[in-house]
Image (cartoon, rainbow, N blue to C red; front, top):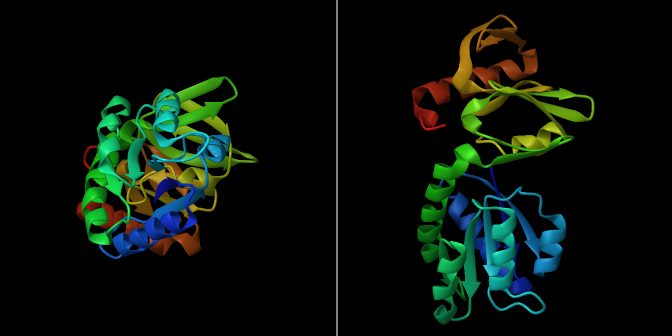
Amino acid sequence: MLNVALVDDEAAARQKLKDCFSFLESRVSEKFAIDEYADADSFFMHFDGQYSIVFLDIEMPEMDGMTAARKLRRLDKSVTIIFVTNTARYAVQGYEVDALDYIVKPVDKYAFALKMQRALDRVARRKDADILLKTADGAECLQVSHIKYLEVQGHYVIYHTYFGNYSVYSTLSAEEKRLPARQFVKCNRNLFVNLRYIESVGDGMCVLAGEELPISRPQKKAFVQALQNYMHGGGNGNV
């Protein structure tokens, strides 16, 4: 699931984009978690590096879309930015902030689907390097390919990687949304594993990179099905 932010002062424009996403979900395998913001200030109050794609209205009061994009780029170098505008004349400014594209209002769902394919392609290419963890010691940028599994310990989620373990104050459900759903799956309520590293599955357990991890009975069927889908082409060889 990809996290998307819609930043537009017009409620009708945000609803139109949400309708376009509903149309897109009927045509692609990806699902989207969408947050709405009526202005850039409220967006930045909640921003924590959690979005893969951000739609910015160019003409907003207080902080306009271009100013917001410049600020966003200082915080996040890889997030995909798409401008929404009433006129294409502003679009040329997008090069300054590495915006992927622009959409002219009113948004057409078919044109939207075509532009979003480019966005999904870019997100897929950058997915391997956009996991930024805020830890007690600062921040760590992890590649998805280095993550073996996530484990819940109290109020923390532990990222087990080949280069050490990293603890973040979070919930497993929140961290799940940051990782590709076709590659990561729960084997029990406290473990979220990278299917790439599964070596074998036995009775109530799996072996992941030489380590035995328990699979709960309620989760086993979904786990085995996800592993089969991944092994038969569901996985991304670049991740």
